Length: 465
Image 1: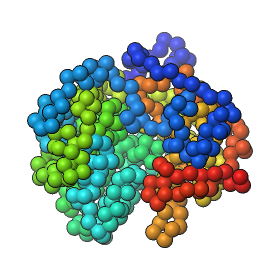
Image 2 (image 1 turned 90 degrees about the vertical axis):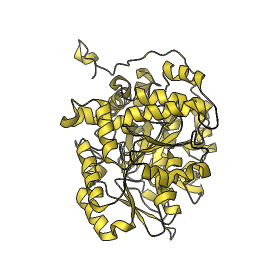
Image 3 (image 1 turned 180 degrees about the horizontal axis):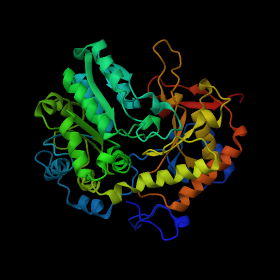
Image 4 (image 1 turned 135 degrees about the horizontal axis):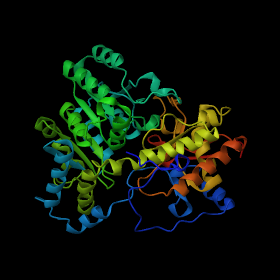
């Protein structure tokens, strides 16, 4: 729990680590930043790292590693089969989740692909609280359809609801009955919920989801990529979890979900991905796709040194002093921005702070991509790279019409153990400047629009230029 300062007015998040290796940063002059974002097609994904002061694009694979993780990399066993490194990963997964059966993948979206290949057939449905871009792409590529069933409170930008990622349980039960259990590939819970502001899901809600799945004989799947943030919120916001250990929470979830998968770029602060289950039946059903798409069953496309650091990182994810740093820094940034009057998603979630771009630039319609416009403007204003999480991150409908996002967000991710508090305050200051000068932000239009995952590669220009 947070250390209390003697003088309350001095209260700030207190890091329970010290910095031992640093990377030099540079802050380009504003004229150069304007040139760089235009060269990148107003797409922050296409900016070069050397041209960025604060990289808040993602928390995936860019977190600070512990000294124990770095040390573990020196003992990696690179045997193709029978690797001791993989055995240590399995042991760490068992310690954290209590599960015996483990399949490796090179990252989270690769695990999603394996799940989809195993269970999604044309005309089937994948029910989830909210989609993630790559999870949806894998399902639709195979002829399935994603159905989002998040409680509608989760789509209200500013509320005091502590668990805005919760499933609408009545809607879930209705959907299974309507489609038929045999047509439901699986029910997927994403905890926390990435695209609506990293909002958490309560333990009570997740257990209710699994009860419904078991009642109808439908597979239940937990995307645990952001679970350590979610566990933090459970412990501080959900009374029944207050006196549970982090391991107890992990084990309760693993006992109830049929399948768990995660990206170790987020859970464990390393690289790679894992699929795990208590029942060997599920891993057996997916096993053949690992060597087909990833690599042998003892490495799954992962580099063995990353696997060693993952094993240590998973164990460290049980430590509240480690897992609290991210949510506390995010909450600090959200409060700073809220105090400035900047429209942000509340309450603060995991992953990062999320600017509500529909309120920042209310005159820009969805088809002028307000979240992308705010992201480009923020880079110009402060050398800060965020990520568009709005209509650009959606895919067009089959008939070519635009699918407008429920929320137009600019995500300012908070890589764990990376930024100092002074940098977080700099970010808040630059966002405040942009808010005060928001009349300068104009809309965008496509110059090059890929058909799939356009937010990665697409290029845009300012309307009228």
